[in-house]
Amino acid sequence: MSLKSIELQQVLPKSVEISKVQHGMQHHPMIEEDIKIKEAKKKEIEKNKKTNKMEQSLLQENNTTRTPNRNMDKTKGRYIDIQL
Image 1 (spheres, rainbow, N blue to C red):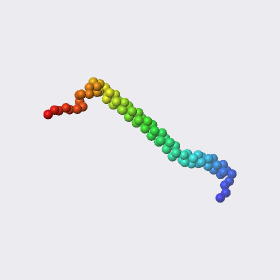
Image 2: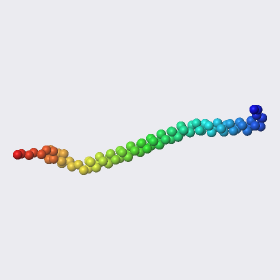
Image 3: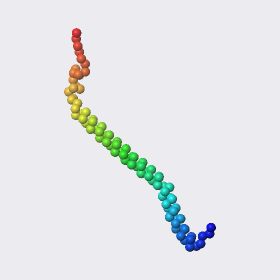
Image 4: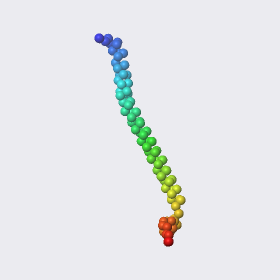
C-alpha cells in the first residue's frame, strides 16, 4: 500500500491530532486520581476542623457547668458515712 504525496499531506496532520488525543487519554486517569486525592484531603481537613470545634465547645460547656466549690469541699459528695 503506497501513499501519494497528497495523501501524506492529509495523514501527517491527523497523526499529530491522534497522538494528542491518545496522550490525553493515557494521562486522564492519573489526573482524575490526583483530583480525587485532593478532594479527599480537603474533606478530611474539614472533618477535622468540625471535630475540633465540637471538642472545644464540649470542653467549654463542661468548664462552665462545673462548680469550683464542690471540688474544694472534700467532705461532700464522695463518701457516705453511716453509723449503726
